[in-house]
Length: 289
Ligand SMILES: [Zn+2]
Ligand SMILES: [Zn+2]
Image 1 (cartoon, rainbow, N blue to C red):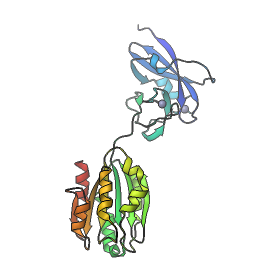
Image 2 (image 1 turned 180 degrees about the vertical axis):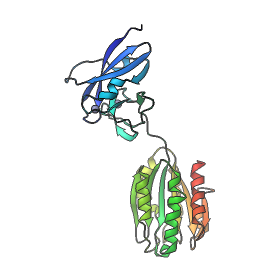
Image 3 (image 1 turned 180 degrees about the horizontal axis):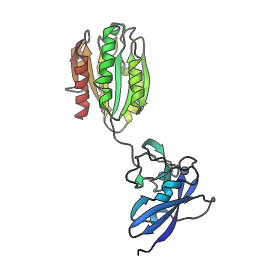
Image 4 (image 1 turned 120 degrees about the horizontal axis):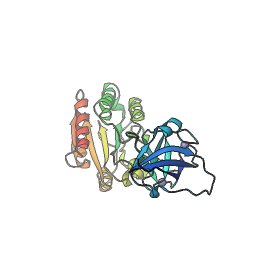
């Protein structure tokens, strides 16, 4: 029979943000998480570095969970290696209660203790939608439906933001990974007003987007020529920040101008009644990365 040893390891409770202990039973090359106990401040316990092998969550821990909050699962911080209790579901961009590193915690798998890591390098996609008066009526309806059905719903993850240009240029929705929120924001669009360029707003208000690591796309949909401004220079500045610009021009849009501000090969000429396939084209440019 394999020799069993019991090792107590200090960790953190994600619900309370407090110290909590985890008890492992070590046998063969397996470290089985068997229980949890409260610790008094300053109490010394082993660190995870003292344990090696295959980590599993045992039946006893699953039955009782974290001593403080009853969470049934545990992950290990990819930065500081601390053990942290959690609910077993995926969490994006959460701060480790031990070291503060912002990481994505994966969902638990096969009773293993998962490790958090850097956020997935999913694309950042900013939609800039023309909501000028000329879009009113059937065109805005078709655009909204196409943007949702043929574009947004084809993603399972990613960061999206929504900027509109009409009476004014507005960030209707800042970057979010909640695709339902994006869908609702698109669904709520109404058209009215003129056609200012959305680019100065993006340059001045979205440093997060311009400086972010990873693939970034600005998808511009418009049906008219833009008001005064040096749009070419603005677009150049955005592209120099590493953002790919995809343009979809419909009806009265200046197609030549849009092909100049787009990343080479990323301008799409559209017409009413065919917007779904044009949004699908924009999608394929992004999916081909
Ligand atoms: Zn807990
Ligand atoms: Zn940490």
